[in-house]
Image 1 (cartoon, rainbow, N blue to C red):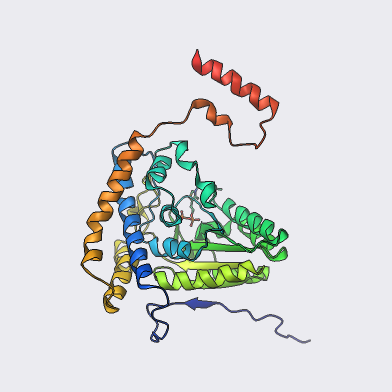
Image 2: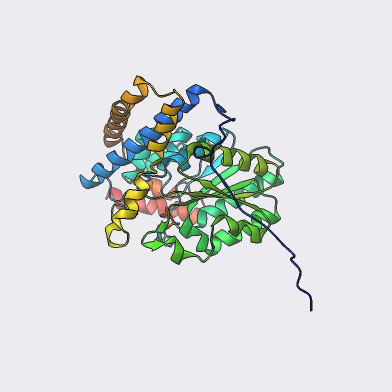
Length: 352
Ligand SMILES: Cc1ncc(C[n+]2csc(CCOP(=O)(O)OP(=O)(O)O)c2C)c(N)n1
């Protein structure tokens, strides 16, 4: 009998802010550091505002991203205009970085479908709620880019829970086989609603799930915005060359799963407090202070961000609602006759 090692894959973790060697500093422009912090602050204030709008009954359910700003904003910073983004339901900060108008994002959370209009112009898919499906969309777009020999790439967002879905495994398999230009960006925020990551999967890391499909898997400190940028830039570069990548961004959901959840029932406040110390805004602020980038303008920006967000929320509250019969549009490029008839019937019914 013989036993030989036939495969030895490994997973690396990327960190920047905690690394001892700083020789790379600065590797983005000073203005970019400032802009990133401002975007993170706007995203944080958006979360707070959306929460209060939900409590006032203007939003029915909201999924907060507090604690995940570095993962979302850092990865979007790495994305080029010609690339595509596939969001799931918690990607508000990513939408902000992608350039979606804040009032439109509020509008969508208010259940107004007009909030989804116009996002294809910023190469972004509409939000998909079914957990894991986003991976298939990411694989499909990336395969199309590969077939067409395009030079762009796609990044798709999901959570740790999605990696237990069949869709995730099918998507990674297809992406590998067809050299898709895809980056699968998993925000491991430690929970799928009340299910902790340890009970979700026996895998020690999410990133290692890539190895079974012959694609690269990397782990990154998801609360370190600079590490996220570095990891995503490298991954996108690989993907553009037909080598898909799975990124596991290790982070933490500081709030409830959604406004319908009560996380005190399934997790310790001590654990939450520990992660608050690793809050990505706090860490980035300290980094900017250490590197003499922090100044009075950034200090004052929290108030400014609040104003920007309040104004956008007020605009969203005044925006028009879609027409009822738009329910039938946007499903097919060319509407089939049967659906067109139903649309007419519906219109008559509504106008009675
Ligand atoms: C196919 C499917 N099953 C169940 C749900 C209900 N659901 C919504 S979010 C969620 C947990 C998702 O956890 P994870 O993928 O870790 O993402 P997170 O919410 O933590 O960002 C579940 C089970 C759903 N939306 N879709």
